[in-house]
Length: 154
Length: 127
Image 1 (cartoon, rainbow over the protein chains, first blue to last red):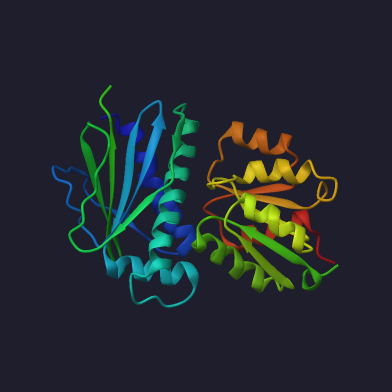
Image 2: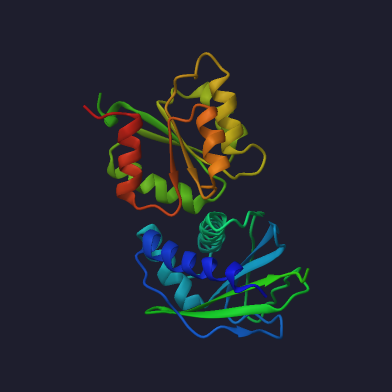
């Protein structure tokens, strides 16, 4: 897997959450994820095409996303309702867009689809790509979230 | 002219972004905020609302923001209407396309409330 395609999405996640919600996040150690089980309570996955094809997913714990959306919208959210799920989709859009913009500056042109949002305990994330699935855990003061990126082998 | 007399239309398929933009517009004391979920709905609502500014997302189903911009500019009634595109599509080709379509200004996601307020002030100078 070409790490040049991955790092801009990680930078984007930090930038988007800091700018839009005032939340500081720090990345942990990346690892290759072997299964499809989500490591959180709500996820969004977005398809990516262009010089590489694959997908990016964000996976939040309930505690983490409720705190982030509360800060993002300036009001308290206490359950994973429609508004919170919508916010997960929009955050995914923004992080994917910001990551693609950074990649475009390095000569990699990518397009993205519309995110699909899934919520619930023990849900699964199905990446379309047949390549390895890289997972990067992030820590915030409100809890953890994960970014998964998978691109097809070419 | 003060924002207190002005109606603004916010177009985005995600209610989260409409809400973020709405929070900023309320702080700026716009008279009224009209919301639409896509370009087609926005163009339809233009007919029944006197709108002074459009703040539209780029990437939406049914009709995108750039398609809405082109439709608005092709209509004599709205060809001078201030139009602010909010986009994650900040690649050079996209910006060129928006400028060619006579966008008033654009703002790249993510943005702070202050940045959005600055962009609005550029397209509608506050007296």
